[in-house]
Length: 211
Picture (tube, rainbow, N blue to C red):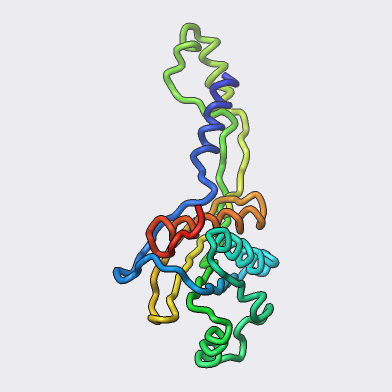
């Protein structure tokens, strides 16, 4: 009985992927190209996440750099206030001066906390081993029905990232993802950065320079 419950628990955990891509969009004119310098701009509205913006930008910059691409975080370029008080002309002029020709936005669209009830014993018929006698069957079903379970809180992060080409002034790529219960903000930033960079390379939006 314990073995069956343990197996079900393992399958449940394995089925909950820490992060998954929900949708992607690629501009039909987009071709794999090498950007001179990509600025990563993250927007997070949840104060409880602390310095998630800075961590997210740093991890994505690192993932792009490992491909041989030059990248910089908006946090390092502009500081914590980013483009506050600036207009579009000023921002584009700043990018031009810094040699930036690509912008990768990272937006935390939403964060949801949901509560689930998990029964103490998750077992389903047929109970071949326990149905041979009344008491064995009764004991098995009694534990399943009356033993108290527990509540678990699942936190989901909904992200969207867009890659803009400043030379053509067009959106080249968009990707939406969900992240489930990250172990830490560091793990969330690392996994997300790796996921979207791999997706852009796989879909031929940016050119892979290093193996």
